[in-house]
Image (cartoon, rainbow, N blue to C red; front, side, top):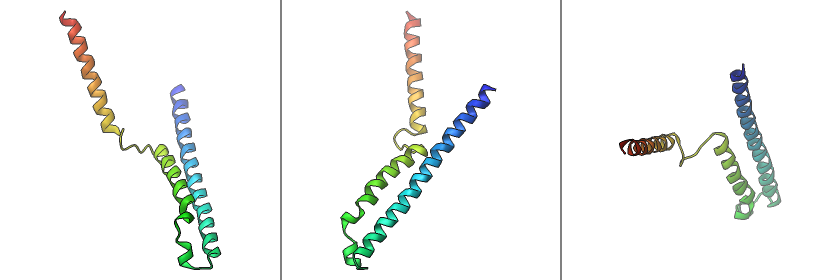
Length: 106
């Protein structure tokens, strides 16, 4: 019974994380589209006045935050992936084995 409840709790937490990310991505898209359309209209439909770097600061910096949110939710970590974990586990297991052999030889 506890195992089923734990699985349900983990699944519910995972669904909540995904839901939070999708809400964040939707709000990001809607708000930034509104901002950019508003800037385009205020520039007088002039492509020249629209393409200025400062008009894209919100899009860029909020996008960085959205990227990190996605990395957390989808467990994207290029540095500490499964292969790295496996190598570290094997390394520490081998070290423990060597330490144990040192003490048993005495």
